[in-house]
Length: 398
Image (cartoon, rainbow, N blue to C red; front, side, top):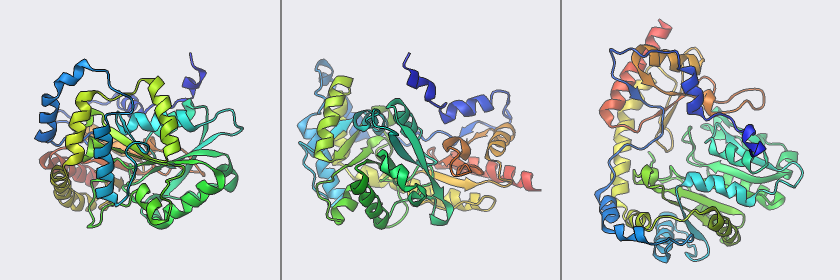
């Protein structure tokens, strides 16, 4: 067995299953889960039709680089969304969802033979970042979220000697689970650090199209362009159709950025066998080329959050995030695990304890005392869950 496998930590949902093993939820309530961040809005018909219309693609081996039409479609979307021009031939690759690309990128760029090879992650974080780092033979360093800065990662807490041995930095903006969006000044600081130490920045932007402000979230390629970095050196942006278009089962996204990194990543993916099905490629073109379904999808989330957030804010420390489909709520009593287990037992609502999404760093776990609520179901179910959470929170403080 690969000895690096032993370094992996259990996935948060595995930890939660172990914690809830002895709990019998109250059968008087229908089960509702706000734990898993899986989009549950209907898949747009134009995407379903594109899948049906292109089943002949099942008889062909796909090219790892993807169909040129798909790469051009993605490049055109990037230009419309971010006012940034990328070369569809050299700076864009389709991937089977951002998750597999986030993992594979670390295997491409990390050199484990270098002393102290390090990957820096936000904290709390999407667990793929840590797993990718460990299986690439690197160690991890964590930048804790800062409540005083809308829960954005505090990169200034990473010491200079850690940056000096960093090879890869994972950034998540809008953030999971906090919903925080990085401003231009923060990007400028990270680009300066990347130039000084030579590390690659992988920007996970899969929540970019679900936002609650008038202005859409700033993207990494957009930030680089505004700062005069049109070559996108040492920068890779990753995006996905899963949240944007409510198609998590399609496993479709893209990476874009530094052409040299794209060339190396394509080489890795060719051997890894990561080509996207031609059927999915055609459906992806239909999705990237259409914006109305994205506007409609965003409106559903906005209406849902507008109703659920004030209700929960009456008993929890929570507010509307910048973007994403999570609420990052502070629970009464400060014990996120106990709150989640009690809520499940008494009201049959599943939520994810924040401490399971983070690691102990700088003397504390920045997820402790909070829960992540994924408002992915239809509004009625989310409101019912919120009402039960209110009732449970009141019972714990009475």
